[in-house]
Amino acid sequence: MALTRNPAPATVMTPTDRPDPDRPAPAPVRMSTARRALARIATGAVRTHAGGRAGAPGISARTLHTLDTRNLVRYGDPVPGRGRPVRPTRAGARALIARGSAGTAAWLWLLDQDEVWVAADGRTYLIAEMPPAYCGNAAAWLQRHAAEIRRYAEPQRRVDPLAWIDAKPLTRALVESAAD
Image (cartoon, rainbow, N blue to C red; front, side, top):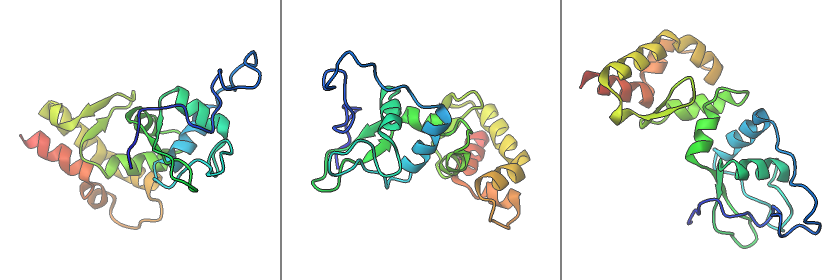
């Protein structure tokens, strides 16, 4: 499946496609709503409606329009009878990490990868390019806050928070980079 860089989805009307071009574009949704939609999209199971209806199952056309105009999602090639797959862009992944109401999916995504660190201000750093001292500080921060993060990301887990955070790919990558 080929993913393209934010073409206008078939189900979202652009200003030239609207029956009444003088009508304003839909009002953007709140970022908390966009983050909830991004959390669902990050699972990889979201497609636009197959019949050409606006939006996607569980995500309104207005929300998809907001995500598209902010370049937070990209659309795959249409699959006959199944709609178009929707995936978050790198900016969409950063928006997920912004620790909003969809923070559970954000933490799970961040902890289960070993390539990037997202700072509290939302800036993304490649771990391979981070100074070793910064990697050590980030790993230490994760270990200090392991109990809070585990309660937030996986509240049903009953394991030692420090052992749990140390086993995550992100922590291992930060510790390895700090040791260099």
